Amino acid sequence: MKIATLHWGFPPIIGGVETHLVFMLPELVRMGHKVSLLTGSAEGSPEKFDFHGAKIYRSQFYDLNWLFKSGFQEVDDNVHDVTCEYLDKVRPEVIHVHNMHYFSRYHIRTVEHYALTHKIPLILTAHNIWTDKLFLDLTCKVAWDKIISISDYITREMVAVGVPESKIATLWHGIDSRKFSPGKPAAKIYKDHPILKGKKRIIFHPARMGLAKGCDITIQAFKLVKEQFPDAFLLMSGSGNIIDWGLSQNKDIAFFMSLIKHLGLEDSVYINAFSLDKEMPELYRLADVVVYPSSVQEPFGLTMLESMSTAKPIIVTDAGGMPEIIHNDVNGYVVPIRNHKALAEKMINLLACPKLANKLGQTGRRLIEEKYTKKIYASNMVNVYKEAIDGYKKKHHLIRSKEIREGDMASR
Image: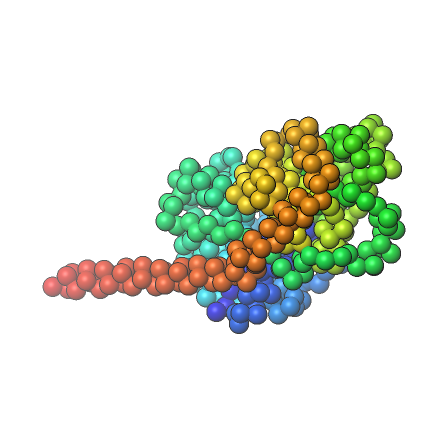
């Protein structure tokens, strides 16, 4: 089928949704579907290109960073033209948008109108929830034919604000289990990052740098780990290009650097921006323990799947959808939000017992193969598409039948 996808960002813009699209779009292509994406512009990236068979189209009018700086002023006509031109070009059988139940009424109302007038099912994947009127309006007052939720947590939150549960399909993410596979790290990672050579007891915090991701909690916990294991090393993945309309990332990173210096950890912490495609899998293989102590209600967290897929134990917080995937003494640990002592205790336990860490990691890998591969996820997504298309046809058949009956009665 022809699938038109729309989202605000795509690499080199990096984030959870962007990572998800990197895996899913080519997988749908491999299944035989024609897939396209309309997304925001990005410096150094062409306006149109092929990504493993998926057609990518970029526009400044889908660039949230630029739109927020401009205050969304005088953009409605441009948004309409860009969106309709894209959809006219790809002629989709289904329109699938990601996180367009927030940020901009202009965009989703244009897409909704196009879907209704062209009789095309409109599907939303809700990767996040928010707490304001815009979220309520765009979640509950748009003619979604189906909503894909990425966790039970997101499903509960959407049902709570009035979305019919029958309209929601809960699909946990999938991962490229070949790219993120167990094994020894390639020698190139040491060549490109010589500081990592010879390091032992590596704790890896792979989420982007921000207070919401609990980076400060990881740093504080690591201070306690160093008291037990002086040779421990903390590796943190920075973020360059992200959707950061609030310009908060630089402020957060400045605080983390000050905290590292204040705690005397400068020689034991390495922060850098790493490539998703080539370097991140190697860093997971390098790690002994992975941590993701989110300080907010995390909708899902692809980091969990990346860690499990590389057979590494992960410690997460009791936040949002993460406890749905990570279970104590099975594939990792769940600790309370913003409790650096609890996080440090689990770090120390895993570093002190490599056999336990390996056991949890191997269990995680088995769970990935059973439940969370990108192939499984893409197949489930296509089933949602088919259900939406069938439901749309039945609905409009009934409407048409009713119109005919009423017309016959009127003519009598």
